[in-house]
Image (cartoon, rainbow, N blue to C red):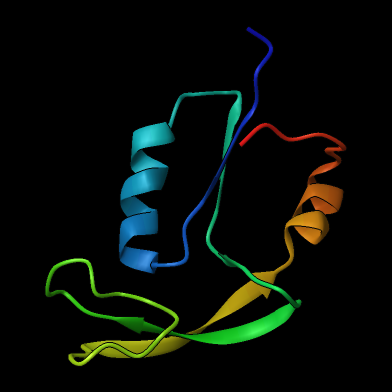
Length: 86
């Protein structure tokens, strides 16, 4: 009760599934970005072969694209959260 779920996913294909799965959950928010050491943008490498999608280039890449990267503290500030349980 009273919990808030903040779901973060960098892969836009997986993010669309996450968004659908959390629809209707009023205490949940979804964010299509990467948590990183610095704010900015990063190249995301997407692969449909297994779980090879990553910020680190895998052997097989189906597509790559730029995604937003934010520090955890930046995201928490944007969401107005001062405490988090992982």
